[in-house]
View 1 (cartoon, rainbow, N blue to C red):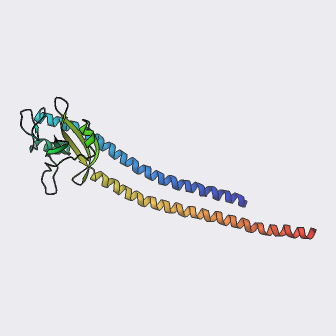
View 2 (cartoon, helix red, strand yellow; view 1 turned 60 degrees about the vertical axis):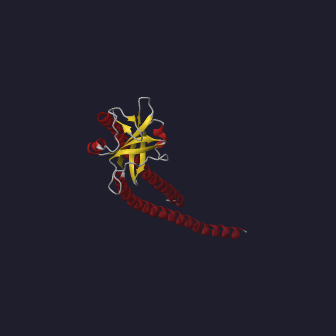
View 3 (cartoon, one colour; view 1 turned 180 degrees about the horizontal axis):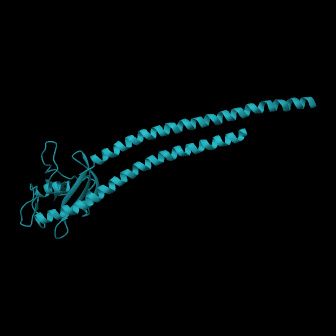
Length: 241
């Protein structure tokens, strides 16, 4: 095979391998995104279903809620603050964390919850906070669904406004599921994929380096072959003259 043909094959192989290396990196990135998308879709469906179920638990236990003085009142006019039957039932039946908030001025105060603090006490009396990512959505009477941090833990959550007969927001119902387990599974997968992809990238890089060396040797060899030809032509011209 002519040296020009060898160079062509070497150049072509180098370009193909470089493209394969880039596509491999893109494929790994897309694969990781797809796994996270599946995780979020599953969690979203979970909390969407369970926030509606939790609202049914709430209505069955307390009837139509109305706002009292710093609390929510059931259909009999009794405060639901400090009553944990509903939230504990949610934890037992659905496996979710849940809280009931009352609207207090511009914020929301937690008055019933199955979320425990580091001191193993229920996190009642704590506030949502006006800087919470769900705040602007729920204050406008809409359901918020998405990730949120609660007492230092990551949750996939749903916050649904509780409204009175005039459709005024008087409180919030919250359900959430911790994402730690799924996040750890994805991290283990990513770590394993990282190791595999590093090996593949190293092997591809070695192959690419070999091809580059081959091209360099081929070009150098071509130049060295041309030198004797130039000398012969020069000698022939001198003889003719």
